[in-house]
Amino acid sequence: MLAMTYRGPKRIRVENKPMPEILHPRDAIVRVIRTCICGSDLHLYHGNVPDTRVGSTFGHEFVGVVEELGTDVNNLKIGDTVLVPFNIACGQCTFCKQGLYGNCHEANTQSASVGGIYGYSHTAGGYNGGQAEYVRVPYADFGPTVIPEGMDPDDAVMLTDVVPTGYQAAEMGGIQKGDTVVVFGAGPIGIMAARCAWLFGAGRVIIIDNVEYRLEFAKNYAKCEAYNFDSLEDPVLFIKHTTDSLGADVCIDAVGAEASGDLMQTITGRKLLLQAGSATALHWAINSAKKGGIVSVVGIYGPTVNMIPVGNFVNKGLTMRGNQAAVKRHLPKLFEHVKNGIIDPKGLITHRLPLEEVADGYRIFSDKLDNCIKTVLYPSAK
Amino acid sequence: MENLDQNKSHIKGWGIDADPKNDPAYPMKTRTEHDHEGYTWNRPQQQPVTIEILKSIERPNVSAVYGNSVEPSGLSGKIRRFAFQYGEAKFRHWLPLILADRVNEVEGIIEDIQAKNYPNLFAESGFKSAWKYNKVNIIKNIALGLFVTYVGMKILSRKNN
Image 1: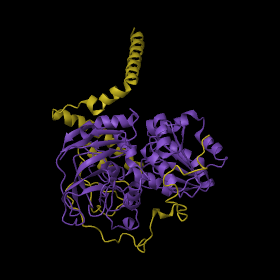
Image 2: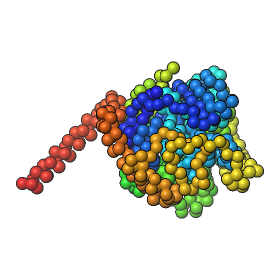
Image 3: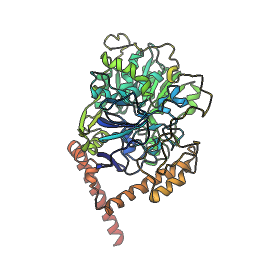
Image 4: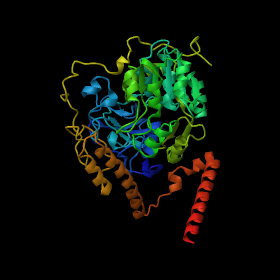
């Protein structure tokens, strides 16, 4: 089968790899029909995630058709078209029972902190991902969900990560009616977080980035205010001034480790790797939040350390929440929102490419070329 | 400045998921009566361990399922095995893993050459699309690179003279 294969930072190709096999009674083999390149895939692509081994296949956002089932999978049948949440969850451990499906403790041997994620390095379990014609899906009796009748697979694939992560970013912000919400980062997740902030009753939603076409897209898609931090001398000061000097009720970091905007963070976090990525967005989020406010973090950082203003965090009495989205928990509500036209997931898709052009897809997304917001790959296996 | 606070009628679904109890962000975790029972859940059946799996020493066991994408091998594998002797709070765990990744890239190139599967660096880096959409910057970067090389060579040749 054809699969995207990592060869080193900014070097990927499509190779013929062996077909995945059932290795556990709760496994399924899924033929992939749509798979996305995620912003967090870029951390792998740039070689920033420890234990990313040459020969791995990335891809944690995919939908497909069930081709083979393990003996213990009774709720799916061959031929079902399923949406597969990006996190691998057993449904039995203490964390899954609490609804923390992004924190399953039975899916990743390599780390006690990180859950199992498809195609996201050995730090996230060493699973091959969905940027391939076929993929092994563990715990297939729990994670995958049959796509509701009539739902466009382009919408469904966005529900594997982007939409639930954006939604949870807003949810973790504990947004109350009338709150001012600032989202740092106008990538797909940030745009979706801004869109979802309204669903929780935000009074004002502001998005901050420095890529003009993305800000324009965010303004139209999420109906929010959008500002380019390159044109602001001090983005934190700007937020203070635009919120009566008190700051935002909720700040969302939807950028993570590859943020730009602060030279010191960029040099120490992205160039010298002295910290686990550049924490510019989180730094700004903490400093922009109102006293007693909430900082919600869905941006991805490495596992070591980052420079953030802990003193301000304490002195302002902030609450900080972060997690990988518990996709499965959000799906029933999000299916309804899509069905009712409240959110338009596929509206984020700007590029559609065959799997064979995956290297170009990554380059376009990574370099923000051709006004790219979100790329979907189409494997051709029938 | 645009302020959307006054009228939300143009925003489909405004406030439909508003929840006063979600403060601060309560529903992230759903409490159960088993929260404090520790590592006692009914574990899923164990996937047979047929390959080398590096286990975090912060865990008591191999997770019930695991990925089988790439086994540790070669020099990078040795470095990874060293890293996994240390806990996840230690730089001695993570920095060797980053080093192993860089070593692994070189191993990958050697493996390609040995298999006579010479890597096409242009195709692998997506150069075609970069050229299509970013031609001007690429030309600028090449020109800058050539200029820096030229200046460097001039300086070196002067020193030699």
